Image (cartoon, rainbow, N blue to C red; front, side):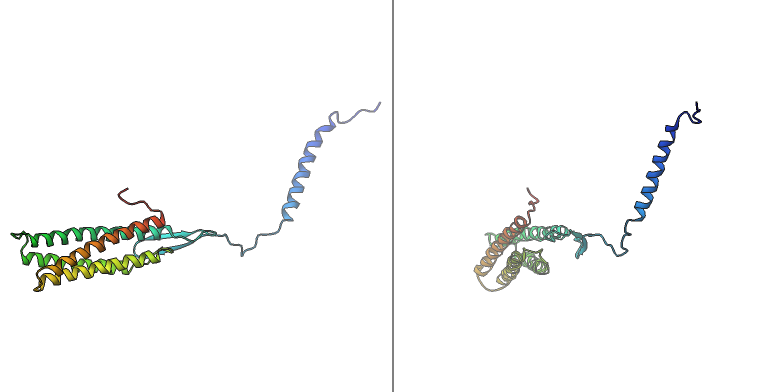
Length: 203
C-alpha cells in the first residue's frame, strides 16, 4: 500500500486561490485607461460684489442668482430708507415749528436745518442712482431712483420756499411732496424685498 507523503493536500488550495486573485487584480488594474490630464471638475464660478457686498457663488445648472449681491443691495436700500425716514421727520418738525404762532423755530434755525435736509437728501438720491440692481429688479430700481430724486427736489424746493417772499404755500407743498416721495420709496423697498423673498428687518 502506497503511503501518502502529504496527509493534508487541501491546505495548498487556499494559498493558490489568493495568489490567483492577486494576479487577476494586478492585470485588471493595468488594463484600465489612464485619467486624462485635461480633465476638469465642474466647479461653480465665484464673483466679488463691489461695495463690500462680499463674494457670491453661481452653481452650474442654476439660474445664476448671486445671493450675496442681492443681500447687499437690500441692505443698502434699508440704510437709505432709514435715513430718508429720519429726514422726513426732521423736515416736517421744522416746517411745523416755523408755522406755529408764536414760532417754536426761528428763521435762522429753520433755514440751517432745512438746508441740511436738502443736502443729505441729494446725497441719498445719488446713492440710489448709483446702485446696480440684481436681475429682475431693474423696474423696481427705476421707481426707487425716481422717488429718491423727487424727495431731493422737494427738500430743495422747501428750502427755496422758506427763503422766498412766498407766505408759506410753496414751502408747505414741498414738504408734503417730500413726505409722499419718502412714503413711496418705503413701499418700493418693501416691493424689492417681496421680489427677492427677503423679510423686513422689523418683522
